[in-house]
Amino acid sequence: GEWFTRFVPYERFLHFLVVTSFLLLVITGMPLKFYYTSWAKVIFHALGGTEVARSLHHFGAMITFLYFALHLGRLAENCWKKRAALRDPATGKFSVPRFNSIVFGPDSMIPTWQDWRDFVAHQKWFFGKGPKPEFDRWTYWEKFDYFAVFWGVFAIGLSGLVMWFPELF
Image (cartoon, rainbow, N blue to C red):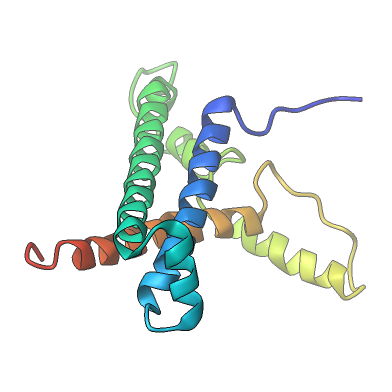
């Protein structure tokens, strides 16, 4: 009966950008990397040539930088909006426990010791050594996936910029 909205439309839009840019980058990047193979030549022919593939690859990279910047902007916006929650209502001063509850709470993507405990409990359950665990809003594997994409975009984007603008770097 009950429905929960896990991702708001903005987050769904970012996911759309992630998926489409990734597919575009793979479809164009692999033949650019392996230009000498027969399958790459078939893909180049279907795309309209190597220059078209390179332009499409650069376009996919710009989409990637766009969603990375949009995501960072949303993180900054959320931090700004929640800044009042960092203050103790009685004193009006910054509160470390309130900070910790926001940064490491159930709505946070930051891994915690609870995620490690959840991982261990999940492994026990997989092997029939414990009960099925219950998780918070974000599971340990979702947090792992998030950081894999987040830091992967940063690392691959940086290396892509170095190859795109070698004179600058």
